[in-house]
Length: 431
Ligand SMILES: CC(C)(COP(=O)(O)OP(=O)(O)OC[C@H]1O[C@@H](n2cnc3c(N)ncnc32)[C@H](O)[C@@H]1OP(=O)(O)O)[C@@H](O)C(=O)NCCC(=O)NCCS
Image (cartoon, rainbow, N blue to C red; front, side, top):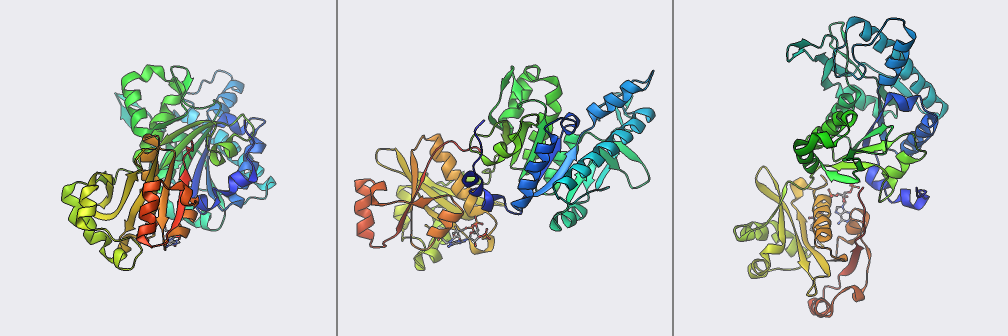
């Protein structure tokens, strides 16, 4: 594994500052030798102002307690089967011990943490004729409580237990808890810390996969997946569909895996990612007028170079629109160089009512994804007033006239805008 250097970490700091990461530890991880290293990694995340929520499982702990009880066999260990009265009692003991150990461990790395009753559940009920008794499913999360704790830099530790507000406690699956928290707290990431390297399909580890593709794969060939990983994969897909951009599966038995997954380009485990670009579509001839209206003001203030209706029309296949409820609120274009080895990101615009919501960044990310799909070596941008934005939010760096093709350089001189030339060289980066 490549060690993660400080410079490598620093480049992610602005991107992750104040963002929520839900970290779900399998029960077996909290008992492992590497657990103290994981808590140190959590301390690193907190020091970078990442807001961490910890969730833990207890399957391994339930089994261990059961092994000491003569004649007792738990009716379920992972919170997805039937939880009878006795198994619930054991689950409560196991969960309380495990939560306590996590709280204890966090205090050794000077992190403040609390456990809470913010997972609201109701019974799973009767499924195919089988009453699941004390197994519950997450109904909702007390978002306000979690947000209050996170705002005060206190780590909420959520056990796999749910409360119904009427004095009942249910055993819930920890993957379910983690993903419900991820969705309802609008987390940037859910990270499953497990005892395997990642998600396996036909015994090969998947490096990264879009949630929709994973869903299709699972529909087609569920038996190719390891049975014990199916629940995680399904909750991960669901979380991505409901707005969590990235779900990771990593091996918590390996030192530094958490930090390496988060702060390196390649990562070490499996990344399941949402299609963040579903609000972006290619423009058609019918959209030319909309684009002209959108960018009119920015052309007046010279933030954008002047384009005529005919200019846009002649390259309409290069333009994309960002839509909310069917209305275009932003646009961008990707013009390819004559030799098709590089692209120019142009005409980036977000209407003022929708500024500062990350739409500009999404449009840049989308263009980057398109450029990678087209195997372009680099993207350039020419900017007069927004170059700091492209550098700080878009990951571009200063380029030079040598980054332009001779044809583009000629136009550059003709325009007399003296724009700054910025460039982004494309290399693998899955974070
Ligand atoms: C530049 C523009 C596309 C940004 O769109 P957006 O959707 O508001 O951007 P995001 O939400 O992704 O990012 C907002 C962040 O960028 C910063 N930002 C916005 N415009 C900036 C600028 N001109 N220079 C530096 N930073 C800028 C915001 O302060 C905010 O910072 P924060 O996240 O630290 O609070 C939009 O303001 C715009 O359309 N401007 C006019 C057209 C233009 O200049 N286009 C570029 C042509 S080369």
